[in-house]
Image 1 (tube, rainbow, N blue to C red):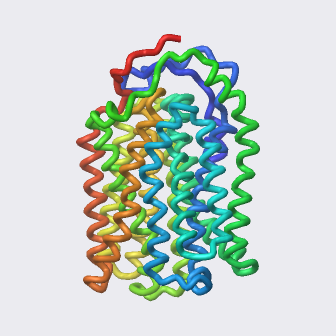
Image 2 (cartoon, helix red, strand yellow; image 1 turned 60 degrees about the vertical axis):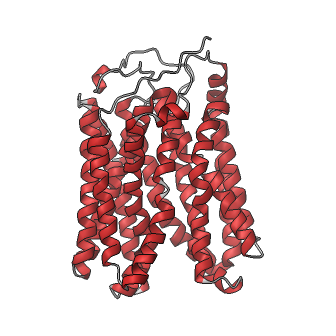
Length: 440
């Protein structure tokens, strides 16, 4: 199904969406000579995959790094968290760069930066250098979603956003699974330093097909008459939907970061799983996420192509996803070990429900000129959960000695997402920007 869906992503030059359904889109506009095709979408998905592999290498290597560099558990925790100190505000910088030098170049610069930071981590001699490199990694990786969203919003019609975002979500979910499995095997033979060197240098290989594929698209973007410009951030911040989408994204990410950060400890220490059993359950959750995101993206595209309302389609999926996550957290909180395991699997499916819609909604609301900046702001708010969720969970577990109330908090925040997406975000259609057109 995924391969069939990829083949169906085609270039079109839709007119500005003024209605609430795909029927309002002009699908007969003349195609451009240089097209944004399947190859570019595949490279965007691959870049997200690389992004999450490189981000997760520290967690994979932590057991060996801890002994060699004499790192305490608190220092390991700080290294895992400090990434978000630059990744979160870096979203805004990335949104600005997308407008100034275009998304193609911004993505290339960001990936080069995070790849170099990854490789240099293999040469780190102490804690301070590791902190600096994690901060640098956060800056580089912050370009991924603003750039992807700008390009997808600019070039693809509404009824193709589901599959395009489903593919990037597959990269997001499979990256950590691959990084943990392949990274663990590599590290067992060659050590943690070569792990970072290998993955960092290998990541740079992505630049070759990206530059070869998008060189003409990037030049065409520069040479095209400038008709519209992206809205300033202050105008985006004035929209009710921006705050609803940002906080809604935070609600999804709170539960997601809680699960991926604490799942191993919860299963082993609380539920009595062996390490191999824990790895198997964790892998199944990531696979459920990947499959669900692709299927949901494809189904949403079919629904829209059949004339479905964008508001109904997107809200039905994302509100259902948040409600299911809340119920799954309740199952983990109150159920037996088998019930908790099943609930975690269901949560993985629900995260996959949400993933394509999270970005498709932002790309739609921001429109062709503002999709990148909109997602930059939305992702900035959403990824604050990466800082908050692990800290709150650690505090709750330390105070209570169990995960019960940590799951309750995650479920409550997920339910808040139902309110954000269902009520605060109103009609899902491109918003009108006050920014005046710029003469060619």
